[in-house]
Length: 135
Image (cartoon, rainbow, N blue to C red):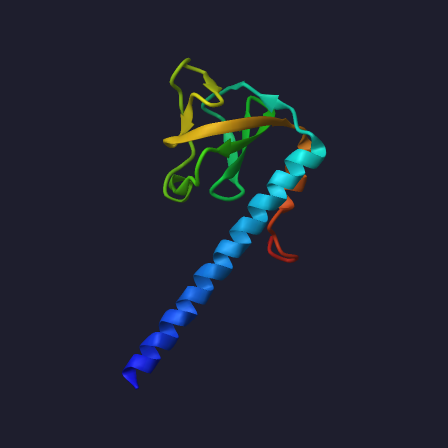
């Protein structure tokens, strides 16, 4: 009986992880579709300051506001460090400039950066949110 309960609990946990992974994949694909449909312009670098803001979309993408300009940042891998630490650019090539493909944020290499308008930022914030999830 104990083995059956343990097996059931394991299957239940496995199903939860799979569901979470599916949601993450859906969000990631929705952002990729957004980039393609909107034909977002890719940026090579952005100027940063101490008053920058950011919003996490998932472990692959963040919205970054630097000096009143908005960027969608894509990482080369899932950046789990976003959940544990504040997002701070690791400036490497220049004191106030972060470059795509060369620099990192929280140790996660930036694959691409896309320039955004305020309207596009609002649309991207809505991706993955269910109705009523905002308070």
